[in-house]
Amino acid sequence: MPVLVNFNRVLFSSLFLVSMQPVSGWANELESSVTFPLEDAADRLVEMQVENSEEIPLVVPLESLGPVLDTKKVPEFMGLPMLENTRPWTPALVPFLNFQLDGKAIDSPVVKDVPLKDTLPKENPLKEDSPAALPVMVGDAPIKVIKPAKILAVDVHPKMPRIAILIDDLGYNRHGMESSLALPTEVALAILPETPFARQTALTAQKQKRMTLLHAPMENERELKLGPGGLYASMTEKELKETLNKDLDGLPGIQGANNHMGSLLTTKKKQMQWVMDVLQARSFFFIDSLTSSKSVANQTAKEYGLKTVTRDVFLDNIRSESAIDKQFTRLIKLARRHGSALAIGHPYPETTAYLKKRLSTLDQDGVQLIPLSDVLHTPINE
Image (cartoon, rainbow, N blue to C red; front, side, top):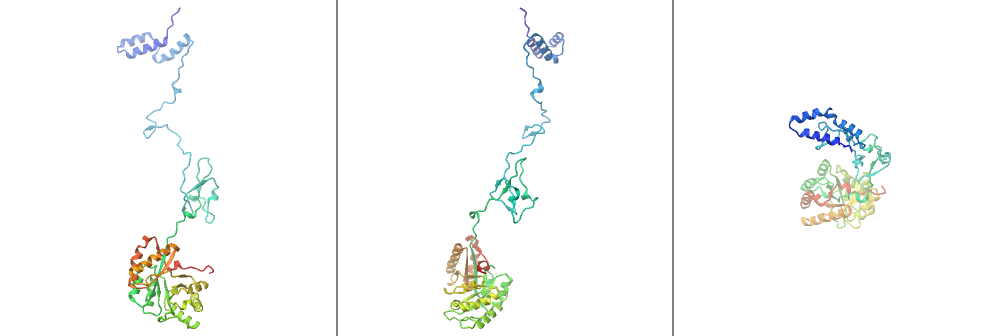
């Protein structure tokens, strides 16, 4: 039987001995016994195996194992090698974008596949090239735009309770005038006609852009003296209107009127109609101080189309800090209940001192001091 030689084992054994032998004689012997270069040994071995054996070993070229990376040229990202010219990563989903429509930020956006033109406001449409009108594009995906959610009643922040304050009886006292003019300009002043400091009070308040009005003296049930410019139930229509016009002309910059006393005259329908005739001709408002529960002044003012309101609280019927504070607390409660409330006070030292201190900390109560004009009601039939 012929002896089969495994040339594969012989070759690799020889190569192993050459690499391990430190003596150069081994290399010379191997060089004299092998007639082909070492680098061609693998190819020669394959040819010999083809000639002497039916089993052909699989020789895999190095190129089929993939590209050889040059680590000196491969870029790195966070210390890890990356292939050159890689395609940048793009997200599969697009996050919500903060859009603005008509200059207002959109809260609670809802993404829908809708035409761009249907999402723009009709009254003030956006230009096509404005940033808010630009659609969101994701490759070939459909256009997605952000449409604002509907505003519900629960989303509307409730209005802050509001109070207005009117100081009556200005004109007789310098100290009362000065302390009243030192209060916040939202506080309105009602000035008695033909009094020593009436005109000066009106002019100074006008420079402050503070609202002023005529504190028209009207007849009361107790028959108390009214002073100059008083209006009485016994007057004829001509007398009453002439007196009222004279009172109004003597106060520069005034915008309306309210009643001083008047528990009798404000219950007289005819006399109240004469008063409203004069005020309507000047486009003035009227405030009912409500010195009588039977007053028809407010209702008559509405019938004439005048802006009007009724007093809610008297601050200082009792001239003490504790009593004024109690009434002021009641004013705030009414404002919280109805949205707004009107208080009337007087230029007493106790009243002005209390208001100067109390109004400076009003924001702590969550209540807003507003001008008198902001609580006036406009009749629906105006």
